[in-house]
Length: 462
Image (cartoon, rainbow, N blue to C red):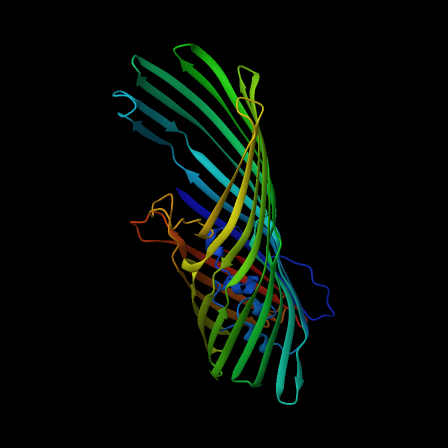
């Protein structure tokens, strides 16, 4: 299996006299579910190692103490013009036998190569900041918006596959199924936070910050899926097909707090620390689907499903620490380590599912209650851990970045031209199998900045 993620970013920061118009980052993937990853193309160009840097208008999403660095009123907008996530599956074969059913029962399957690809684009961050002083006390309030997870993915997938089944009950029969399936999803929305943050300091050597975030929004998605099969058995050859359309809507709401500190013992050295509290999110989910199955071009079954789910989800807390070193004014080197408490992330909700068919069974309704299941992997503590029931583990992110600023580059009227490189190692909240080690996503980042006297534009590629 091959896993690829491409994210292009653009951030614009300006004084309030300039109208911002821009671009930046995010694709739905578990490596970005930590809630500790902030926004902005400058930070992402440095690999996301920004906890001890945090000196622009996106600071509240990394470390609210960094707001104290700002001296003038600023507006910031971040937009994701392009993000892509793809997974490729090589051809594979399987063999299954069940001697309990029949001494000669076996099933042989062949899957052809399959590609899954999803793309996304969305607003990622926006803020307005107004620094001011009361005597020796510096206060920097900010109102901001951040898309923590982007659900706005357009996906396509499909694969042909073949299954051959042989059994003897009591005589030998062979059935061959040749399937071709295809589907597409179109989802909009995201998990967003609207925050009020405040940076404060009495001394330029120590900055403090606090933020209150209101979690909101969700996703609204539609999907279309179909398969068709050519079946050969003792009765001859015939065709069967299925078409399914579905719609799913989910909503989140809750509140969390972030607290940060930024210590500058010397002009060349910074230490950053940030804690983001857990959040209990109220959760609502609804799903509906309509399926039509045909046999020899005649509709043989129509099924409608409705699912309603309500409850709460506990988003995990995270603790991050960073260090930034400036051997000279034009060069910054930074390193971050963040730990996220995914092992305690739980979901408690009740699901009511209704299934109705035209034939052969009447409508039915079933209610199921889930207690203390992990989220988002849905680990069931009442069942043994397995590849199908993975236990969530705490995850660690390690991020490294550099920024070199070319002053007075002498073109386009620029006052500065920052160049950035970064590396990230995102340990996942899940394992590929219980008996294997942790899964890690590794990434390289690069970025560039265009800085004028009253305007800066940052671009990054992850």
